[in-house]
Length: 189
Ligand SMILES: CC(C)(COP(=O)(O)OP(=O)(O)OC[C@H]1O[C@@H](n2cnc3c(N)ncnc32)[C@H](O)[C@@H]1OP(=O)(O)O)[C@@H](O)C(=O)NCCC(=O)NCCS
Image: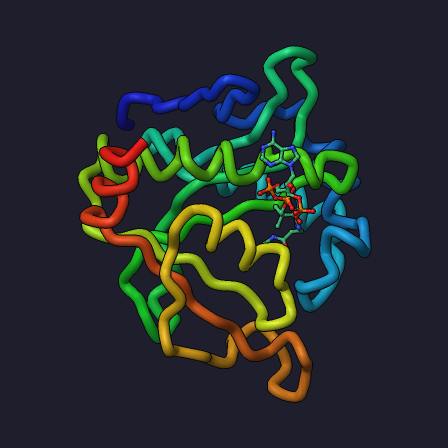
């Protein structure tokens, strides 16, 4: 078990999961707007299993996909964080950054703010050389977050194994950010 890392920003707290997050996450995971670029909505059981998986990972390593909370109200917003990608992705091994927010909380800069705090952990605390992110080609909103973070688009486009090949959501793009570029961005601020 590693020391628990729970980054925070001006507006946001990234934290370990609680049982009480499960209903709110399940609502998000059955919202067709939130899940538009995933192959299916999640059942309550699948959504709860995701909380348990992320919580166990954070407990073991100290970091992962954190629950995201609004400081001023304590409201659960969704999740943002970093975790290793499955071995069968074509760019593995890699640590990815990812995000999923409840629809009422889009358009406020929360994903990018929480992602920057996650990148600070990745590069400044864990000393990773690179962080990756990937999404379905039509998920332009997620790609805009990657670009706001200063990530660079890789030439690789790949078919995701969990999505039927004929689906418009099959083909994914990849973005990367190196520790060197992160260091330059932080220094330029
Ligand atoms: C992807 C996702 C997290 C992006 O959320 P988002 O709110 O658009 O992203 P950000 O946090 O970067 O917010 C940026 C927006 O907030 C606006 N904004 C408002 N106040 C702001 C502030 N104080 N600071 C920064 N941006 C602010 C920006 O103008 C921008 O709006 P725009 O996109 O209309 O130009 C969200 O759409 C989502 O959860 N999607 C479903 C799940 C998903 O697809 N996840 C990715 C799978 S790979």
